[in-house]
Length: 484
Ligand code: UDP
Figure (spheres, rainbow, N blue to C red):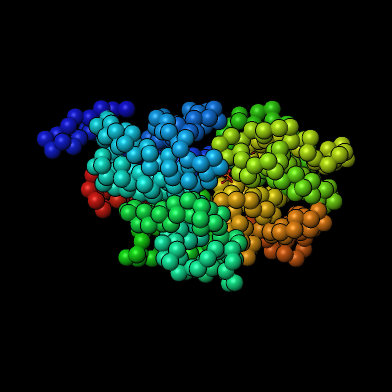
C-alpha cells in the first residue's frame, strides 16, 4: 500500500493513490463472500481498492485461503481477539457477532487511522451485524459510513422497522394471529419472521432492534438483491425517504467460479455422467444440519422421488442447534452413520452423498443440475437464480424461513417443503420442482426469467451496475460528506 503525507490540517493527501474503502466483515463465509465480490467489482469496474477487515474469531483455514485468493486490489486485515468469555454459553450467533463488533471498536479505530494515513480512504463500509463500528469510523474521522446488507430487501425492511415494531407488536411474533405486513413486502407469518426475533427475552432480539436504529446512521445501504426477485420492497426502498438512508440494490453479487477449485472433485465427475437437468442438489449452506429424524425422512423422500440427487450431508444437529457448524463447516461426526440402513447402496445408481462440503457454484452451473433443495441462505438463493436453478425451500435458521415465504408465496421461484417433513411430501415437492407440469413448470419458468433479469442488471447500464456507479460517484466525485 502507498503511504501518504500529512497536510497542515492533520488529514492526509495521497497523490495519485486510487480511492480506497475499508470494509468490516462480521463472521461467516456467507457474509465474507458477497462483500469480497463487492470489493472485486469496485476494483475491476471503478478502480477502487479496498481492505477487508475480519474478526479474530473467524480466522479459520477456509477463510484464510479465501482471503489469500483475492486479487491484489483487495487487501485484508484481521482485528485482534477480544474477550467474549463473560457471555453465557449458548449465546446466539447474532449476539456473539454484535458483541465482538462493539468490543473491537478501539482496535478498529486504530486500524482505520492507520488506513487513513496509508491509503486514499474515501469510505467505511460495515455489514449487517457491524453497524456499531460506525462509532469507530466517526472516532477515526472517516466521514462516509455505508452499510452493506448481504441479504435481501425484505429482511432489510423488517430490520429498519424493528424499533417501531418493538413498540407496536405485543408478545412474541410467533403468536401473532395475522402475518406481519410491511411496505411492499410479502406478508410473513409470525413463526417465519427472522429467527433472532423469535424470543424477545433473548439478548439477540434487543441487538437486532438496536441494529435497526443504528442502520439509520449510514449514508446509504447497499443491498445484495435485485428488483425482479422482490419488486415490492425494491419499488419502495428505491424512493428516498427522510426516515432512512438511501438504499441501493447492487446484486446479485455471488462468488466467482474459481477454476481449479473443484479439480478431481468426485461430485463434478459424477455430475458429468448424468443427463441434462436431471439432478437435484441438496445442501443446507455452510453450516446447516438437520435433526436425525428429518435427515432420515429426507433420505427416504429423495429415494421415493425417483429423481437423481447430489446431497451434501453433515452429522445431525440433535445434540446442538441447527446452526452448530456456523464457525466451522466440517461435520462433527461421520454423517453417513445416520443415514437409513442400506440407503447409499440402494440409491447408488441415481444418487451421490458427499460429506460436509461441495463446490456449490460448480454444481449449480453444471448442465446436469436441474433443481436445488436449499436452506434458503441468501447466497445460495442468489447463486441458484444466477444459474437458473429452480428451488425446493427447506429453511432452517436466521432469515431463511422469511426467504422461503418470499420465494414461494411471493415471486414464485421455489416450492416449500411442508412443516411436517414427511418422506412422501418431500418426494412430491422434489418431483414437482424437477418435472411437474403445474406449479413446478411455473417455478421453472419464473427462475429462467429471474436469471435473465439478474444478468441484465449487472451489465453496464443495468440497474445494479448503475446503482454501484452512483455510490462510487458519491465516494470519489465529492457527493455527500467530503473526504475521509
Ligand atoms: N457453499 C459451498 N459449498 C457447500 C456449502 C456452501 O460452496 O457445501 C457456499 C455457497 O455456495 C454459498 C455459501 O457457502 O456461497 C453459503 O451461504 P448461504 O448464504 O447460502 O448460507 P449460510 O452458509 O450463510 O447459511
